[in-house]
Length: 73
Image (cartoon, rainbow, N blue to C red; front, side):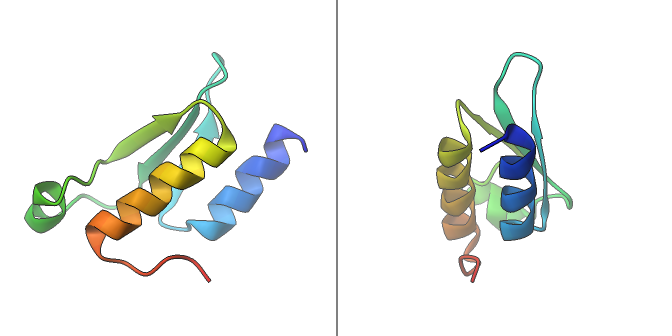
């Protein structure tokens, strides 16, 4: 699957994040809104990265768990 397709799928799954792939090949996600104090205390991050699309999904799911938001449907 092309990286553009991966980007589109992850963006649909996690609509509160901007998803991109760097020139170096790393996968990144940045939240659309600032973190609350509670989210920071829970270990949430504004920006995360991973080696591949599956790793980024894992990171995004972990961020949802930390923030106490339900996983995507």
